[in-house]
Each structure stands twice: as C-alpha cells, then as structure tokens.
Image 1 (cartoon, rainbow, N blue to C red):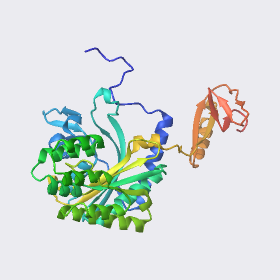
Image 2: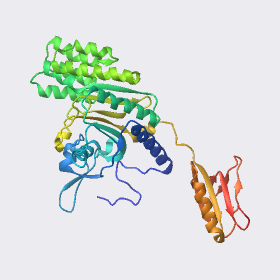
Image 3: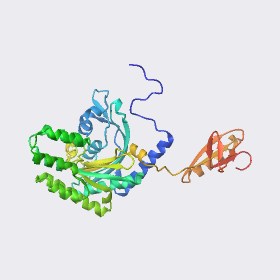
Length: 399
C-alpha cells in the first residue's frame, strides 16, 4: 500500500474553508436558537464511544462504523449518530432527572462508506430528542420543531413525508403471516424506494389475486389526511388500525400548529424498520433529491441502557442543508488598524473598542513605516490584497 501524499485526505472527509465554515456555523446557531425557544437544552457527547454500549445500540449498520482499539484492547467507535449517546447519558448522568427531557445537539458523526458510493464519511447533524413522552402530541411536536428548524436554517420549500412502521407490520402480518423472508424483502424495497422491485417481488410470491392487489395498494397510500381513510379500508389488522389512528392524531395536532400543509402521509415510508417503533418521517428540499431531515419514534432504545422510556426525535442533515439553501451569513464589516510600535497600546485599545461592536471584524498590523492605502471605487481600502471598509492609522498624528 502506497504512502499517502502530503496533501491527501482519507476518502469521504473534507476541509471546510472560511466561507463554508461561516455558512455552516450560521445554520447551526440559528437552528440551535430555534430549538432553545422550544425548550430544548443543548448537550455534547464524546466523539469516541464504546462499541459494546453505544455501537451495538446505534441504528447504523455495523459495517458502516469506524472502529479502533484503546490501550486496553477494548473496541471503540467514532460516534455514528448522536441519538444512542444521548440515550446513554439520559440513563446514567441524567437518571435522576424527571421525564420528559428535551435535548438538542450539533455535532459531526462518522460512517464508513464504499469509495465508489461518493458519500461523506464525516458530516454534521443538528437534532433534537424528546425522551419520556409516548403520545401523538410528542410526535407532532418534534415534526413541528423539525419544520421550524428547517425554516430557521434557510430551507423554505420542502415536504415532510410521514409514515408509521406499525401499519406495514400489521398489514404484512395479516397478508404474509409466517413468511418472514418475503416480508423482509418487501420492506427492503420500500426502504430503498424501489417500487418497481416491490411489484416484481410480489409477482414472484404466488399470492392470491386479492392479496396481491392489497399489497400493491400500499404504493398508492401517499397524500393528505384522506390517506388515513384509504388505509383503514385496506386492512383489518389491529396493529395497522392503531397505527393509522396514531397518524391521524399526529396530523390533527400538526393542523393546530399550522404546519400540516408541509406534511404528506406516505405509508410506503418506513425508515429503518429494525430501529424505529412507530411514526417515522423524512423531509425533502425542493432542489435536492435526498432527505435534509429524518426522524421518528424509537421506544426500545432507552431499554438497552437500563432506563426504559419512550422517545422520539430527529436530525437535520446540516451538511446537506448547506447545499439546499442560498442564504448567506450576515456580512461582517472588516476594519484594519495599523500602528507604529510607539503607539501600540493606544492602537490595540482602539481595536478592542471596535471589536465590541456587533458585526465587526478588526485586524491589526504593527508597521514601522506608514503604509500606502488605496481607496477603491466602492469606498473601501485595499491592503495586502484584502478589502477593508475602513482603516485606522496610528502614526505620529492622531488616527
């Protein structure tokens, strides 16, 4: 294996230059401020976690985790998500805190992908978790907060697709009872949005015509609240009916929030069916073909850390949102303070006073010789190839 060149980086990671960092931080701060106004307190968890705790509890596939050994031979992982670490904290450091808990975060996460996939192995997420409330009100709250967070991030044209794992589980139990492999194959198709493959697999299952039409009918269950009634007529399974009622209840709360126009019910959307236990949702921006937010209910996770509790939440794909929004951070007024050594104290005091003003960036230079500053057509000064709105000089005369 050849030694990497001095400027090479591992596959899937990138450098963020100042302009990109400014945009990333602007999104981060606006979203976290939005979450704080909804009562969500920020939490920070370690980059490294034990594989045997957080790793095995994560929704991320094992093969997608970055693993390493510590000095004692224990397997660690670079955090593949933030939800599992938060569950660990809620069950340990916050075990005496009364539920429900509302927590928010912004952090980088790591997932290993095949080189040809062209996906990032390190990316940023900003998210929220509501722990200790299993109601439809809680599910609606996190969806409404996800919508508010997208708007705070500068994404204004988007749709939230809302589904429920219980509906498909109930329908498949009714129609494909005992045929676990077939159920798994159909779920994989729906998870990957492979509707052509879904139909082809159905045809290969040798099902009765009525049952095949019933299962094909799932693909039409996408739209407004009228989908609830259509779904009710598709199955008599108790779990499926309860799941539909739960979605209807969520939708009613979202109407009260005034955000139901941003939400469509999509019963083909199941999220990670091995992880989520109830409603799931994804948000798509108008100009991107992949989700900018995803979330759902995961009531089994806290049990793995010894504190059983219902939980629901979401994560914004902050790195992707940078591509989806054209909004840029508020411009900063760039100033330059140049001084000779004998007037250093006076100049640095002035620079400190200027930095106390909002929206101002101040650079300083110590030069024995007074520089030539050329004023451009827009009234700015140019120095060392950079542009400054104003320059303050401390050379003999008062600047």
